[in-house]
Length: 63
Image (tube, rainbow, N blue to C red):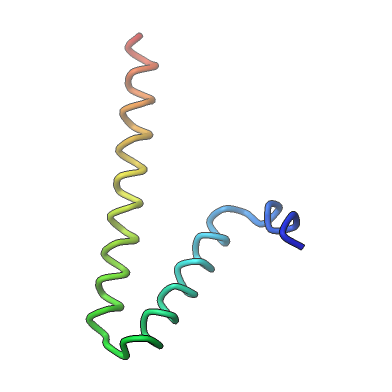
């Protein structure tokens, strides 16, 4: 079963993880503020990943 998850495209997998984490956060705290914090955490992680990809690509191009 877990091996089949590897065949799911990453954007769908990440979206599913984000939705499940938001449901869990809301179920525990019942606060919309907590949902906004989770969204900020997700988008911050995506921006850090993109910056790391850009810096790695830039170093390969200039080398």
